[in-house]
Length: 81
Image 1 (cartoon, rainbow, N blue to C red):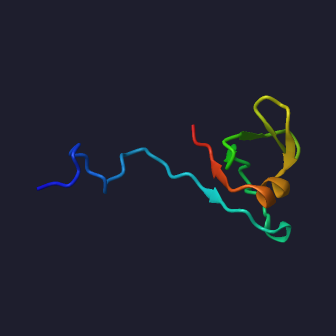
Image 2: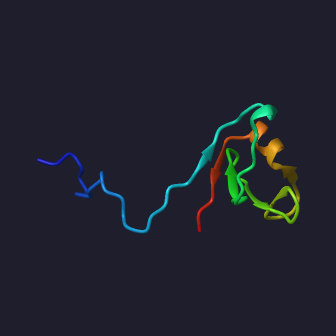
Image 3: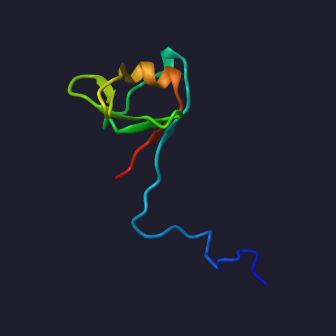
């Protein structure tokens, strides 16, 4: 008897799938920026993309922040294509 009504195998991961990285809120002293500068989504569901230089901005361009500012204020999840 299966407990999964859809019959899907929940233990397997499909080939080619990737796992997103997560950064939890941390103090400013512990905010090393990832070298690949990924696009991230904050806990308010805003997507932040890297700008030339060292900053990040929202897609609409209304907000700007450094990685240290983002990491000290929000839990962040990497946005995968």
